[in-house]
Image 1 (cartoon, rainbow, N blue to C red):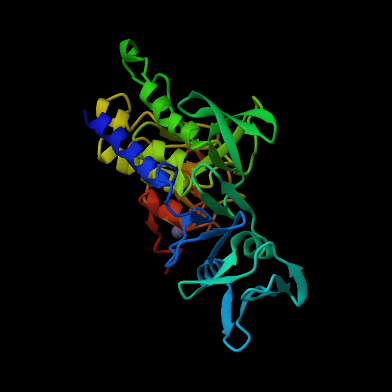
Image 2 (tube, protein in one colour):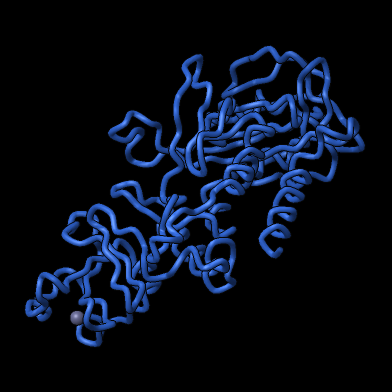
Amino acid sequence: MIKIKRIMILLLVFSLLFSSVSFGNNPISVYVRNEKLILDVDPVLVSGRTLVPLRAIFESFGAEVTWNQDTKTAKGELEGTIIELQIDNEIARVNGKPVKLDVPAIIVKGRTMVPVRFISESLGATVNWNQYYKNVLIDSHEHFKVTRIIDGDTFVVDFNGTMETVRLIGIDVPESVHPDPSKNVLDTEEVVRFMETMSKYGLVGLEFDKQDRDQYGRLLAYAWIGSEMVNKNLLELGYAKVMTFPPNSKYLVDFMETQKIAFENKEGYWGSGDFTYDDFEYVGEFVIDKSKNLIGPIGNRETAVLKGSIKSDKYHKLEYTHTGQINDDNLIYFESLDHAILNGYKPCGYCFK
Ligand SMILES: [Zn+2]
């Protein structure tokens, strides 16, 4: 019952996120790097172009904005790029050079509104437009149409004309995980149903890690819908476990924390007993000490910044040799200070006097 409630909430969240479709008058939403932009004046459509409040869009990029009241000209400056727009003037200037706009800047409810695509692209960002949900997606990941859900962590997208299979990375939705063989078939139907919300949404942003594809030729990706990451949602719901294939570990620490919370709150398969905390998949160079739920790359010195012993709870500087007695089997490397702290490690008194 709780499980069903969770799904209903999630579906509700999704339908709220993308509700602009069902109610014709809902405003256009603007996302910058997967964060929804808070706007005091709603974006407006003029001749098929979306105009947004100038200050909000410039500041979301960290650009400095100045306004000249005499000439009614706004100026945005970011890392050597200067953009100037004058109200009702279809010629803008980028670093002094004139650029013809499809629609000029206008004033709406006392706010200067500027064409969002022109500003974004002038600042070197990419822009995607989701017609279905009326979302402007700036500097998000490239977006693709979902054509089919295969299972809980795999789906097909139209990748610029080619049908490509995408495997969500950093996680696994196991088909069978229970130590009791008679319970060894996990019904992942509800996970697949959850994934179907992606097909309804139509477009997903794909973010890649260090490797684009696995040995089966599948794309390896984090999937984004607006400001939600599907991989992380599956962990939050207790539908998936953390499974990392080095070197694709961009979100490892975040995923481990998310999984821990799902475990503690008995979400999804944690609650039904299909998942247990001591049977993580151990993949590649990563191992987990079951008693500590420790996770870390072993023998990956190149990317490590700290080291420790599985048998103690102290982390050490890599260059210190007083740990020379640590047996190879017990040696663990940490990729960051967070990584060490997350695993319950504390600074060694000798290395960090
Ligand atoms: Zn030390």
